[in-house]
Length: 309
Image (cartoon, rainbow, N blue to C red; front, side, top):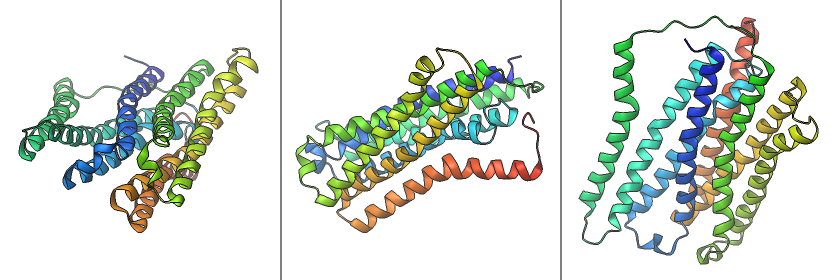
């Protein structure tokens, strides 16, 4: 039977697999709104692109959620509660990702000459169903056939495991920041960017600066570990690394939300709707990454639950 530490690390590694797939979609989706052929898409396809982007952002918010919970609630300790939460969060992230894949394939199919909307929607629906079957139905059937499994008794997490986990959590956040920064820098060189109002351009520039700050903070633990700690595994480094990762998630959440507002304005040319999408995104990310974790920490303090419960 695998230890709780191994289960937590495996869950984080599985989250990294998903986030690497999600980051490709996020970067492409943001950029697609500024591609020359975007205006040639039918209205339903343009709306599907916006919906697909929103679904990918929900998936990203969920898959990264175990990181802040681990540091804010569990203080880096590996617990059964953390493992169960990570399973639910990463499992939940697969649903919006599957739906986003279906929407993307439907839109891509419309670009093939001679294929109608009906066939495009059928292709998208088939891909989403296939993903859901392999990601949910098949594993659920296997789990039922094996029955419940016994949980291992908790023990204190060694410092080397804590450091490994916080670095893994940094690598879970970094791909999303990379994908966003790539879009942000590339789109400034596209003709459609010049058609945006000056206010939208300034917002995009502010989002670039925020994403850059997030990337700098996420890379900082590696530099600190090698230069300040000389590669030693210490409690001090774990605290510093966790603070860098948590700090990076603040500007990243703002930048993701700001640029969602920019692409929404690009599609609908409505400042009010763009502000609504941006605000909803900011609530999603801050609520998932910080509100949920801080609420869990407050509940645990009130209940006076030991750290290894």
